[in-house]
Image 1 (tube, rainbow, N blue to C red):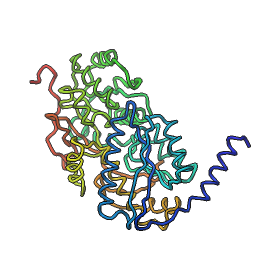
Image 2 (tube, helix red, strand yellow):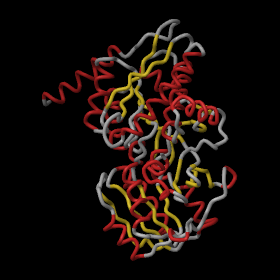
Image 3 (cartoon, one colour):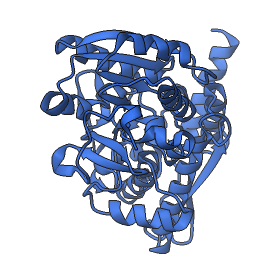
Image 4 (tube, rainbow, N blue to C red):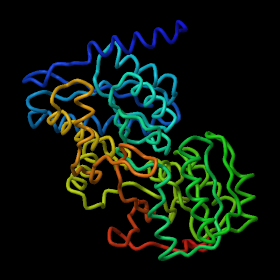
Length: 399
């Protein structure tokens, strides 16, 4: 046995010895470790999630906490780097002795954290990392609140079938786990439904100029331009599409950057009529969703994205798990997490196994559209807050 493997085995054994944490008690605090990108390219996402976790903890504690125990989050900056996120979570587990972890943003970081949590047999509730593979490993201690990336565009597919009926699509995506998973599902859908995929091209995240690839898209004249991008890339892609007079029946984002308030700030009027898949909008009818939206805006002076709703609802799932668990040991928390069946502001939460997924929550996905500086829900029709605008007017025809 190598020294490294020996250390790993001893570390797991040592953790097992202390994992039987005390039960909840009046006046105590239960702390949950949360790695988040608070610096770097994904800092805007991390900041919003941090605010949502804190807001939820304050609400829960203001009502007496969980059986008298206060809920607290130890939020530490991963910088959006998988190695840093892994190191933070290993410290949470072996030094801080937290029996459960949540958080992270990108799929790469979430996948790295999941590997650490599974190794130490500590439950990890993923709430944003979307790459399909995160819940396809057969891991016992890994659960996911949000939809897997491959299902993000379910609402978009429904919109295609019932309204748009496009004949061609160009797919641009960043070369990350999230970008690859999400774009793959669109490509497979298009090819199986008779749509011509005129281009499916990845790019390096953080590019400074997308005009060469957008010129290529313009020459191919697709009905749909589908982009899977984080905030800065999503903003630049739309600004440069307008500058190049690249027109399509619709520009559609695969969630992430196209849904954030900062997308509007960065891309300005180039966002108008841009659509995006989304997992949540303030207009959904789930109990508590409207109050969450209103309170978040009052507290932080900005609208929450679905990422904030994920973090906020994760805190309430945790509170429910703590209240039901037989003890605060990782195994009992895992069992309580597995038995979760509740409604949150983000929607229903119940972890299930299907196809290759395990411990995966199922949920409906939406289509939003930026209209007059507001991200409106436009599909499914039953959940719409505004009528969709399709096809989008050509740039030169807009006032």
